[in-house]
Image (cartoon, rainbow, N blue to C red):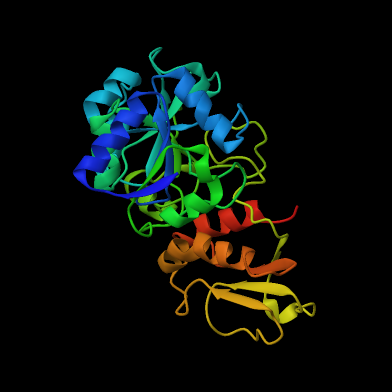
Length: 319
């Protein structure tokens, strides 16, 4: 696999790869996606194969134009279109009724689908030039850390895909928020790049997912996910950890005593949840490569994007 600068010529080349039924990794504002033609069952099967992803975990379809939404989904609710107008393009994935044009392999047999419009020029151009609907989970082996740089994709997937489009470090750094709008009351199934508080400004009665879900109806609902190869344990404070040799510490902000730890990563020295979200997967990748035996991660306040960060830490942890 090679990393290509996101020039018009290379984006056109990547679009042809997708239209040929093969796979391309591309940048979004959240994480790097592993893209295949959402309208081609064989291409989607290659995504599951490359990621070693369970077939019961649905994929997100990415679009670049609202006209495509009407082609692939049966959306009639005016409230859903109000949500789209407020949050697209952006890091909000919607669960909506699907049309038959979307293969069952994309939705794991469900009659609903996950769809979003990313907020990244390279992603939007690639989608427009290819099929207009690109299935794209994070470009990593299933259950492992999500990639926020092209180098992460190269390290994690190697020659399993055709090419990677370079887009720098992802601006948000955690996956999209997933909002189910198929019922009477919208429900956040996965916290992510748009905070629950921001959604409540538009939808005051929005509900929130149950972390104990075992049968996923949307991407990212499994209890064990986004995991480093080293065991990760959640603690109230690393000040309480006595075992520090060959161990790493993942801190929300400056302050705790980290003497004796073999590796330390601080998500945001000033305690900014937005900065913490953007740095989370980079920090976990760094700790995973540090030659340590285990990682201790401090809890962070579950407010704003802190809720999404804590969700990813929980899913990465030993249960």
